[in-house]
Image 1 (tube, rainbow, N blue to C red):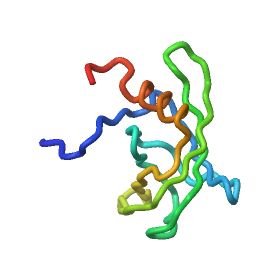
Image 2 (cartoon, rainbow, N blue to C red):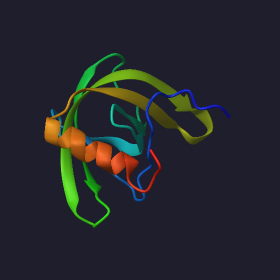
Image 3 (cartoon, rainbow, N blue to C red):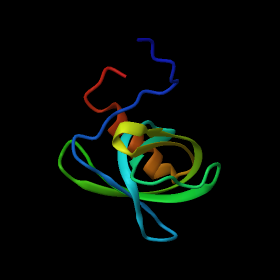
Length: 113
């Protein structure tokens, strides 16, 4: 299978919940992350083409936790029929410079990228 995405993606080793900062509700779990976007597995649909402020926490290679708060644009969603799961793709539109560096390091940790 050919991979057409422009950026390397990484799956988290553990379940990572994603929260909508505005409502403080958990909207899903991270499927994978790149330095420019996120795939979320959700139990319900989100508003198409909307802007979200998302919050999640990742563990680095040393076990340290870091919280991220990122502005994101909802690009697409697709329902996995047999499982009643929504796959939702976002691109990042606002991330602090420090968080961008930290996220890039996390994405490329333990890879040749």
